[in-house]
Image (tube, one colour):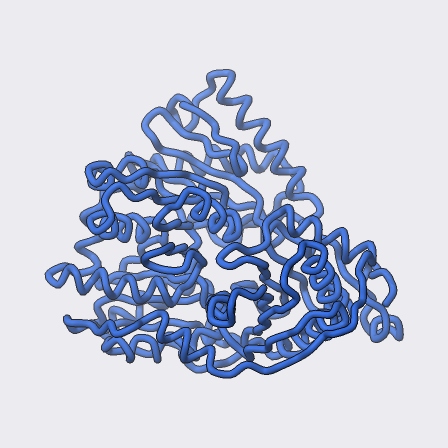
Length: 498
C-alpha cells in the first residue's frame, strides 16, 4: 500500500485504488473526517494498518474489539478499517453495531483488549471517524494521536502475518447486566427517552424498561438520516424538543442521548433544560453524601459551582478543573483517583465503585434514576432549584477552519491575557485571572467567567459564559468576549447563540 495522498479526489481511478487522507482528520483524541470528501476506503484501511502497527510497537497484545454506529456507511468504513488491522497481524473481534460505551465495555468483557469504535459521534451525517484506546478506560490522547498520524501519513506501517477475524456475540447482554445488575426502581418514574433516531435507540428504551421506568418514546426509531434533528444533547434544538415531550406527556423528566450513546442530557419536569454541568453538580451533591471527601473533575467549560457550592464544600469535595475532551477527562479522573468527571457537553466519567471510568450515557441514565430513587420526595426541578443560582449560556460554536482555528485561538488567548494584565475590565468588572489550561477562561472578581477554546472535533471555536449575578451580566460577558473574537476575520457564524 502506498503512502496516503493528502488530497482526496473522488470519482477518479486513484480514489478506488490508493489511500487518500486529509491530515486535519487526526484530532486531539480521536479521528474524524467527512466521507468521502476527506478520506476514502483505502485511506481507512491505511488507518487500520497504522493503528495495528502502533499496537505492535507499543507492546500491546495484538487483539482489538471493533464496533460501529448505525450510520448507513459505518459498516463499510469498519470493514475497511478491519482489513488494515488484519494486515498488521492483529486479531479482530467484531462486536457488531453498538454504542461507543458498549465498545469500551467489550474490552473488560473480552479480557482487556484494545478497542476501535467507528463513529462520528454527534457530528452530522456525512462525517465518520474512529475512537480508539489500548488500555481501557483510557483512550487515545494527543500523544497517541500524534504518533498514529505520523505512522499513517508517512506510510510508516509494517505488515505482519497472523491477522485473524472473528465475530463476537453476547456483548450486548453482558453490557446491560453490567449497567443494571439487580437494580429495580422502588418509586414510579415516567421518563422521556430521546435518542434523535441515533444508535442509542437500540439500547436506552430497553435499559429503562429493565429497571422499571415507564418510557415515553421520543424519536426512538433507528433512522440514519436523522429526520428530526441531529442527536446532540448539547444543542438547544434537541433540548427544546425534549422539553416539549415532557410537557405533552407529564413525564418526570427527559433524558436525551447523542449519536453514539456516550453522552446524556436532561430536561426536568417543568420543561427546563438543565445544562449538563449543572446536572453534574446535582449528581456530585448526591454522590458526595455516599462518598464524602470525593474528588470530582470538571472540564473548563463547566460551571464554577463544583468549587463554590456550599453543599459540596460541606461534604469535603475536592474540585479539579481540567481540559475539555473525553480522553483528557478520562485520563485526569484516572490519575487523580476521582469518583467522577463531568463535562458540559454531557460526557460523564463515573469511576469505581460507581462505573468503569469511561464516558457512558447509559450509565448516567441509570445513576440519575438511582439518584431519584434515593430522593423519593424530590422532583428533578426541586434538585435544580436547590442549586445556587447562576446564569449560563449554552455551548456556542462559531466557525473556524481546522487549518486555522488553533492559530486563531493562540492570538485570542494572547489578547485576553493582555486585557487581564493591563487591568482592563470585562462586563464592567475587574478581571481576577485568565486561566489558559485549555483556551482562555476569563474569570471576573465575582467568580463569573467567559471561555473561548478550539473544538477538537469540528472546524469551530467554542464559547461558554456564566454569571453568578444575573442574566444581564452573562450577556455582557458574552458581548465582550465575542468582541475580541470578532477581531479575527477567520471566525464565522455561530451554530447557536443567546
